Image 1: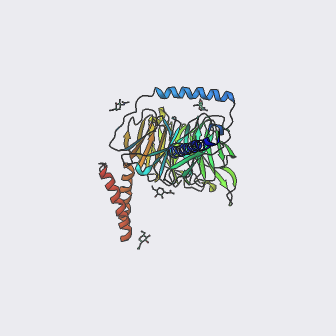
Image 2: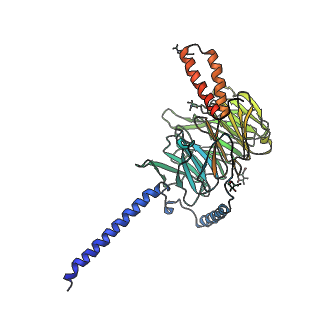
Image 3: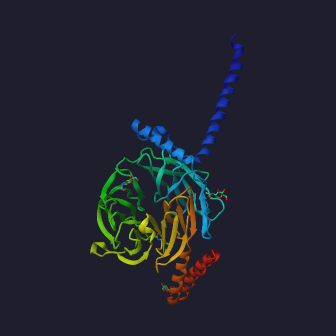
Length: 446
Ligand SMILES: *[C@@H]1O[C@H](CO)[C@@H](O)[C@H](O)[C@H]1NC(C)=O
Ligand SMILES: *[C@@H]1O[C@H](CO)[C@@H](O)[C@H](O)[C@H]1NC(C)=O
Ligand SMILES: *[C@@H]1O[C@H](CO)[C@@H](O)[C@H](O)[C@H]1NC(C)=O
Ligand SMILES: *[C@@H]1O[C@H](CO)[C@@H](O)[C@H](O)[C@H]1NC(C)=O
């Protein structure tokens, strides 16, 4: 009786098997497509948290979701020097970072995503970005690793540092994968900045009490710095990776050297030098890309440019090169960015940006109400041609006309002294390039 049914049964199981295979293939294809948009970290992998923590966290997240739904429409802003607006985030952007190879801009927002933008597209109509999700949390700070194959983020609810690896896929896109372990929780106050040394030797995290931690890349604390300045407002690693600096309630900027042995082994953190000259709390500071210049802005209503190319071990102090007025700084917090060549200083207060040339200390451009909220980050790209700002759901990119004008002025000066034809030609070429850039922006005369 059973025998005749056998072929039928076999047919059925074969069919079922085929269906299952097709389903698997479909899922796999879906995955590949979805990966462009996701980072893979399952909730099960998350670092252990107490149940109490979890309920608090979800409450916080629900509140954040509600706030997000009530968000007003996108802020409108136009200006002749606006090069582009990057709009894909559905939450407010808190931090940006350009990769050291100049190819990418990373942004993080309270929409639980990090976006990686291709800088090549900035002047095109479409701005592509890849998305990495931050499971059950969001990132407040983001920094690329020096090799541009990973980035680190600070987690808002997790209060800790997470590392994401970027793996290039065959189709040219990237897969973002969080490493299994977050860094241990060590800070007792909210973290205000993080950084990775360009040498890849250490990570810095700074909280708004007086603590700066120096970590190795495995998440072990190498050193704890007490800044002794009542509170930290900003802290950063110098582009040369030698120094860590901080500012806060006291009127100085303090600079330390992070010392490594010949074999790359960590040795110690020592006091290096200070920027002394402001008469009130320092809101912010920045380095030029060769670490030989620094700029600072203070509640005393001034900004200052410093020559920090000194031998502090021989008791040399940084030289003050220039002081400029910036009244807004006396009444509200502000941030600054220094162009890579230190020729242009960008100051942001509230939702406005002011550009100064550092040679004469004159204000050249002013952009008002650039964002719907206060500006949260400000940065020149690595060429110094563009300035990026964020504060609401968009990144806005500006042409750095004062930077082009500084090149024109510098080349004209050098041309007068050029001793031979080949030098003359090279300078002339750079001069023409800068003049053409200004001409195309309708900004040649000023
Ligand atoms: C921005 O402009 C669009 C179209 O012109 C308008 O619909 C929208 O209400 C504006 N948004 C704000 C916040 O003003
Ligand atoms: C640190 O930041 C938190 C949250 O913004 C704030 O409540 C606290 O007063 C700050 N602490 C200091 C020392 O500024
Ligand atoms: C700094 O930036 C300039 C361009 O403004 C570039 O020519 C130079 O190579 C950069 N220097 C370093 C050390 O990155
Ligand atoms: C031209 O002058 C520059 C310095 O101004 C020098 O470095 C360069 O070697 C000179 N080139 C020739 C071909 O003489």
